Image (cartoon, rainbow, N blue to C red):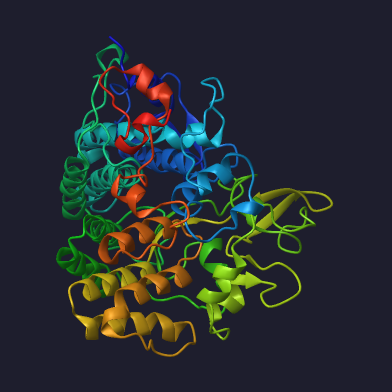
Length: 494
């Protein structure tokens, strides 16, 4: 029998045991096994850290190292697709059934249609859930051993919840795997579970994460890059927003905003929020050291000199400047002034959020991008709460949240009517969270709630109703398992 997870688990078994010199800097230990690992707190910590490393690999995958943006930004209204090329352009145009040879496993379109990397995260989370509770408390060096062990367990539940939520937004229905396979031969051949079941499991896991986690000091050394209770509540708020259950989204967001100890960062220095963990970072993927940074990724396609000294012409992937001018009609906006270069000049404007670049070799060569991937931050959750409040007709409270973000950006209160408020909040999210992996998913929620379509030229009303915004599975996956079916819209497109 074909085993859909056999090739996935093969990679996991070679990766999941690791020692971390720096956080997320993995060093596989080939002789380790589950039975002789998991003996003390250092190993529990190392096993837990491996989940984040695997998630970073998933988000940095593809030939351009931009998978996080391939899913969350490229198909949105942020980019000028005429200025893109290769698979990235086809991804942006939502031509997701582009034929790819099975051997071209490096192609971005191939990688985007496969969920291998995400199941590696889940497999590691399943191992942590199974083995962390077996580590004896007397082998912990933390002052509160039980709390430390619970926190590692909470991180595992969080990562499993987050990964299933992320996959549910990308593919809709996906197989649900809740235990690791001790032997590859025993790996189950599973069908796709309905998205409702996937999200229900994510909510169950996130509640277990919350029960085991603590709110932690936002200024701690590993703040933001290790999940805590704030990250779990942020995830819960996002799950409910995606489900359209806005009444439950509000209290989850409240828990982050009111108890997380976070503070809005300086809008006059937007790139600083991505250089390292900021005062408002909730959950982010660490890439701010040389050992974590990348020699490819979003910086190399959206920047040019003087922000990327090795690129003299315009950025490889140009943003939609017409859309940008409409979005930032108020040019006093601090997010525009410090987050974009060459706006309203004779040169092409581009986003400089990811301009934290260092050069490891002489003559400005050997560029390494050291920008954290910020998944959740305080502004996101404040505006998500505003969205939920507007959706539940609590317009006054929604305006308070919306205008707080606008005030921090140096612009006045919104003049939108109650009937316009939901869409105006989504436009504010577009301003605040530009090129941060949110916009495409925000567009889908806006379409669901109001019918307003910001990308009608590539996602018609009929295509939306048919579920085109959910990715297909690559035919390679379908061929591996007789129990897998193609995403409904794409079933006749290959």
